[in-house]
Length: 363
Image (cartoon, rainbow, N blue to C red):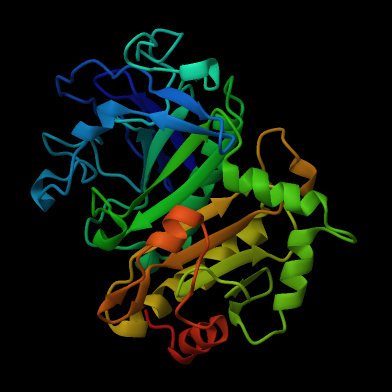
């Protein structure tokens, strides 16, 4: 793999990941771009013990452009990427977190712009980084259609960016993910994902690792995997990975993908694990698409160890879930889920696993 670092017209970094060592990455970004936005602001919620990010500049981000104006398609006047590419990663033009701003409150005034009755809350800059990962230059592709070699290259990019972002000052957790489908709320249909480098440990990770710290016996995640590997909820497996529907799935079709050898994060995967992931995972994605004969909307989320917090308890795994519960029905997060965080699933996990296993993997 060859990695090339260059810059976009406004100074943002652009990384090319190529299979060929002779790839020419000398093209420059000819656009005239506005200044980069100031940093967002984080505000502390004392009732939930969580940080909420206020990023008003993201209201103006690109929304569902026509294919000939897609900023992720290479080498056209509005493109973020000035030449054709295998895999490309660049700093998000509309980031939730960044290292720009006034260094105090992210550009949001505390007086008037932020009222704090009783002094229970707090505010600080949304320091961190957000990047866009383009899986392929083919606008009409999907992650499920990628070759095994292309998936390996994407994984190299994920691992490389995770390692570098984890070393940035103030970054506490790195999150690689993909949103797919209009029903999920995507703003760009081109096959891509994102990476968030958070300045804190996210609530879900903090909660999971807290539960794992109270588990008696071995590692909680490893014990869950061991219990599922021979059970009725396995969807697919190979020598290095198992994909299964968790016993307490929250979504109609939710699959967790675990490596058999425990590692904390993507950079720690060995070459055999990286090579074995693509064929299994793309097969699962194709099964999802075949289930109802429509492209399934989904979120694919890599759960990695935080930079320092309880790394000894973490176990890298992928959570994949879809909100589609039937060919013409979606699972909405309504009152119970959205207000109370109490999920009610319409599809039994055993039935979901069986339905997915019944569909042959097609190329």
